[in-house]
Structure formats: C-alpha cells, structure tokens
Length: 586
Picture 1 (cartoon, rainbow, N blue to C red):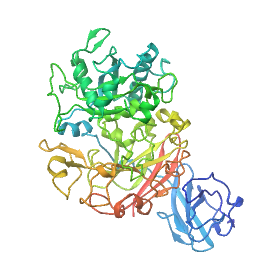
Picture 2 (cartoon, rainbow, N blue to C red):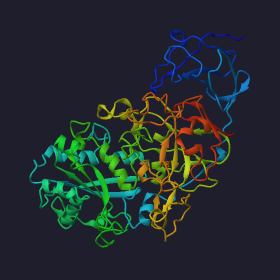
Picture 3 (cartoon, one colour):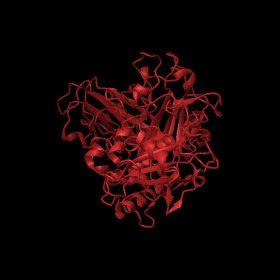
C-alpha cells in the first residue's frame, strides 16, 4: 500500500551559508511541494533533504531549490533502482525543483561483495625517496627511529623549571598506558598508533644547552632565513650530552645514510605575545642546506653522522591545550614535516581555501593523518578498485584499510593522481578532537561515522630540468624505481602560488590534496567541516559522481589527461565493523 505525503519526511535544510540545521520533519516548517514517497518498499527506505537557492528567503521549498533523495538500504542490502517521476536516477539522485509534485520510488537487492576486484599495492616510493633525489635527508617513517631533543635555554630568559623539563619528556615520550600522559598522546605514542606499529619513534632528551648568544640575538638571526637555528646546530654539534655523557651520533642514524635522523630544539621562551603574535620561536621544520639551497650543508658521514632535518618550537606550544604542558598536537604536526609531508592549508592571503577543511594533522594539527599521508609514508597498503562492484571497507583508525579509485590505468605508488577512500569513525586518535575543539577555537572533528573521499594529485616533476626553466611544464605519474638522474619534487601544493600551473599565466592550479563533499563546495575562510559530518562525510545513500565534484577541478576533468570522472560511487551501508560501498562506471 502506498501512502501519499503532502510534506517531505525527514529533511535537512541546507541554507545559503552552507550551515546545517538539525534533521526535523518538514511538517514543522515547509509547505508548497508535494513529494509522493512509495512506502511499500522492502529492505530499505527513502528520505530527502534540500539546499535553498540564493533568492529563497522563506521557510518553504520553492522553485529553484535543489532537492536530494537518499535511499537507505537495510543491513546487507543495496539500492537496485531509484525512480523520480518515472525517471531512473540511481546515479543522479538530486534535481532542481521545477514543479510542485514529485513521485519517488525505489527497490533494493542483497549485496554481493566483489572484493576480488581489488589489487593491494605497496607504497614502494615514500617521501624519503623524493627528498633523497634532491640530496636531502628526512626522518625515516618506518622502523625503530631515535631522535634527539635538546632543551635550549637562553640566558636572557627565565631558565627551565623541573616541571617544564618534565613536560618536554612527557610530551615526547609519555603515554596513557602507564598514565604518564593523561592529556592525550605523546609524539611517540601517537606515531606508533598512527603507523599501526610500522614506526617506533623514541626521543632521547639531552641535557639543556645554553647557547653563546642571547635569545634576543637569536631572534635577529632567525629573521635572516632561519640563521638562528643553524647557528645553534653548528655550535652545539660537539657539545650535546645526555646525563652528562657525550652524544654518539651513530646511535641516531637508523637508516645508515650518514645523517642524524632528526633533532628537536625546544626553547625556553614562553611569552604569549612574543611567540603567538610576533611569531618568534615559532614551530617549523627545515633541513641543513648550503646557502644557495642546492644541496646539503654537510656531507654524509657514516662514522660521524651529520645534522640534516631539524625541528624547533617554543615550549609554549606544549601548553596550548594542557595546563600540565603535555600537549603534543604541534609536535605531531611538525614531525609530519620531518618525514617530508607538506602543509595542507594555504600560505596565500588571496586564496582562502583549505583543501581538507582544517581537519587533518597536516592542516590544523587535529585528529590523525589521512589515508594519503599513511600511504606515502609506507604505513598502509591501499587496495585499488580494478573493476566495478560492491566492496567492504573497515575503519581506517583501527585497520589501516583504504580503497583507491585510479585515474590512470595502472598505479603502483602514492605519487600519482587518484581518489583515496577511507571509513572514518570518531575513535582512537580521532576521539579527543571529535569530542572537544582543540584550544576551544579549532574545528572539531566529526562526531558521526562516514566515508571520506579525497582527491590526490601527487604527481612528480623533474624540478631541475623543468620547473625553473620552462613555462610549459610536464608532470606525470611516476613508476618505481625513480630515475637516479632526475631531481624530483611533488608538483602540486594546496598553496596556489607554489603549485604547478599549465602555463606561467594560468589562473588555475592543481591542489595536492582536496577532500570532496556531498555539497560540491570548497571550504573557504572560517568555514570548516561541520562537526556532525552532514556536509563532508558521505553517509548511507550519498552518491559521488562527476556532477558532485565539479567545483574541485579545472573544467571538471582529471588533471593529468583531461578526461572525465566516469565513476558513480554510493555508500550502501555503515556499521561498526565495516562500510559497504558500490562503484560502477557511468
């Protein structure tokens, strides 16, 4: 038996500001459009929501509003057919309201999983390989890695207290297992969990070091392209001790490349205005290079490994969200740079877009690393979807599983163009930053579960031959192994001024990483992902196709060859153990 509804059932209103109201029945507010929903459905149901057009100021659906139909299969079922006014709309379950009556009906069928249509791939290449091609060393991202931490005490600032020195120790090495860090994770414990045990970082805290120059002199030196930190590296080279014993740098070269795997400087500056407003003693990562930036400052030495990749920050960052000084958010973000990861926010004042909406460890320092980061650091082996079908996907927070929709016929490493798919759940490393806003002002991670789909363009370019000398650049997906005669770098960035352009005067640019959403909206200014996840996680019944990603691409085509996105991906189910996803070619 069919029931006819004059009003929509279970509707979410999306306003022009893209803020989301709570789900509420249409009976409360909206009248004017009749939706005849077939309720004589087995193994599923139908709901709907809509987005107001720009001139709609009222509380009822009007012509020009965009209406989305969501099909909600029962557990173990998937959509078979969706009809809107007798038109098959499986892959386009949305329309602009042009009349005052719509008939919606659907049928569902059991899911038959097609996991044979998946091919697991190993990273093969990681960020270390890219940096090594430029004769630059980064911190190894797998294995047992020991890093030095040096408390830097300037004599014109208050000296470290024992409590402050303890906060350094706990922020780098503490954990919740032994209750040594009751705030969250330390730098060490975070990366052991984030890498699924593939990376075991440990940090040896050196005796505090007092430079020969003052903090005031350091600030002046830093303004000259980071010369303050370099001066300390040069000066302390033969003077660092741990418990009064001289440091043996061979203990800190796990990959035997002749370079220390990493060194951290933590400064005893703690004035809020000086650090946060004036950006002195700011947190950043760099490499020891020659003045002309063409290579390493020091030649590798297996018997006496040299400094290469280093990080530094004020101790104030450890107190950002913890009165005890146990907050490792900033340390974790900067350690990502130590591995070679880029920032995902933009440095351009003129472009206010955030490719991941603030919500990534390499964006605004929150949550965990996304699937691309984990793939490109050698922690996970995603599975490439080789043919259409239905697939299971476990939560990435616990399993490390991810799927790839390729844009190339073949892909065997992270440095290509593709879509990476992960099942987000607000547990493990996401739990803290989904339950409260970091520092009470940062965007909060999603409370709900859902599918996160991210477009990656990590293609490589021979910087030495092409990037500087040519207006017409050529980049492509790179296969393993790298050409030892080339100087590789990732061509695309989320900062427009640093990203590849087709021509010198091209206004369009390619992002390195950009998370898609069901609204086909970029995130600008202070607009970040909605914490409830309605906008930026794909939920049951949500579909991704070419029309719902058009705003993220130049002319809505793949960057590498100009072809169209020809997939239709639908989320068929979500439970605690896995998500069900269907993919087909349209």
